[in-house]
Length: 249
Ligand SMILES: [Zn+2]
Ligand SMILES: [Zn+2]
Image 1 (cartoon, rainbow, N blue to C red):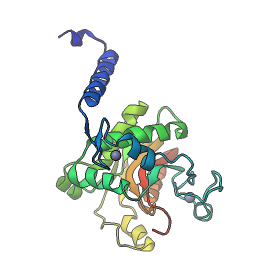
Image 2: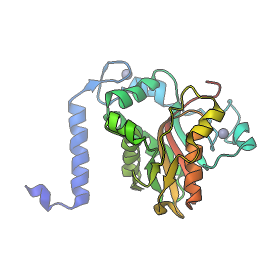
Image 3: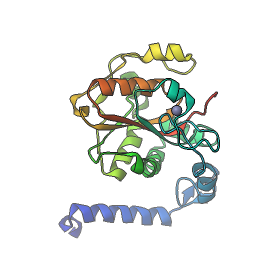
Image 4: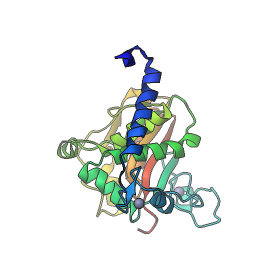
């Protein structure tokens, strides 16, 4: 009962502490190796697969650069600049991390979305320019949303926003027409497939927008989204993606 007399900030902290205590007391199994763990991914797996501090990525599109390339834009970004300004990616799309994305999307393993959001918030913090930035998910089509029951990118985006104390909105960016799945299409067909498929509300005008996606493959969809946001007056667009498909994959 006394909990109701506490300030919202203290109540939030209490809830987080209780959650951590429960998580620590009740071990689960690591989503990658099935060993007993006190977090979704055990410490050895996190060290082996998530943490890869020496990897340099193109600051614009997030692809892995050759060792020693520095933090410069990749050749592709220099030759064909994208509409987005920056991309933050946690890791390359590869085994076994790809299993985590599949578990989230197809087995509704929603705690993984919170974990991705937490990791992305750390990677994003130094790359965000404005405290008024708005976090938005890549929208699913209404049909896909109805089938799946949730949008995995919104589940990640709301976790990112909570950790960074930024505003978030699942409706400000939406699809205005159906698109075919991008997989299996070549890059020209991908561009045609998503052209003018999105619309954005007035809330984006003059703001920095963080666009959250689970996997970035060619970047065509995120480029089209960034064009849409900029047409609507967004000042800066930063992609935040969990896994980035390496080049020539
Ligand atoms: Zn493990
Ligand atoms: Zn690049």
